[in-house]
Image 1 (cartoon, rainbow, N blue to C red):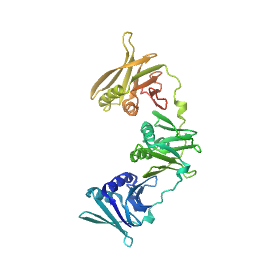
Image 2: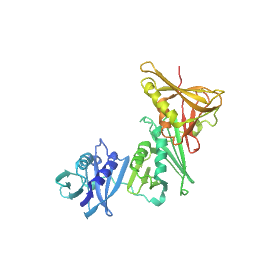
Image 3: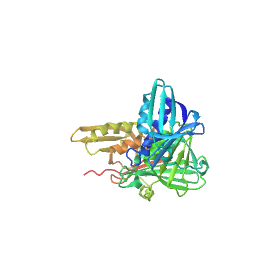
Length: 375
């Protein structure tokens, strides 16, 4: 293999794929990144057998070929090179990659590309196509609610259902549920239901930097995998086996109190409250109050024996009985950070029942959050 490529593009591509490199593995090749010529471009790929990322960058190819080299070592080297053309050449007898850029010349010991696990091929015609910007927003509004508890692997995933002309993502960690729907540009050829690891979706959002393009979601039947195909990148993930909880049963259908409030004002109050609450038990209390002569308000309070107390008051439009309800302040902040509309509606029944948060004017996103019980 003999290839010339831009240092900046190579560094960018390595940054994209290296998150899939296995940090600890009994297979040395899983700590490597694959370099391979592919139809006039240079393909970079890394996998830990659960997640695989490939990307393609423009290159001048003098000789076809492939090799794998230690990902961290190669990436660290490329990041130190000047912004110039990098010349890569492989000696297939010794499996050595030579890297030349400006006055710098380095040789790196590699492993035969034949030992690198093959990435699955899939037919994009079998998938569904979504706008990158919309899918990134969907992931942002749902994946944060997935569990990080390895003892419950199903809850570490995002339930993804494709049916007819709609896609729905849902995640829960047992304390909150985030659900986001979106219409499809055209009806799906077949229904799909799968649990995709939240980590894989977060990586997809990270590598899909071009918000203008499209992404194709492909789930080959019977393979237990999902493939996301972008213009210059591809992500493959193993699916999570198991039954996702029926969150629709838990989600309340009716609420007694409806509170409309500025998203940014409530977020700011929660960020301030969190500074006090995070050293205690993370509790923030929301007290709804109504007045005859002026708009209602929410009083946001946090107190900790160690750090002190904080209180903010925010104007709000409140319909229904007033109440005081407590939440985990981090959970509340995380959902407020992903609401895109100027105002949101907080719907409650009583201080022990789940509450629902929705953007005003957007029925496609809803978030249910369990209150905290105060002794």
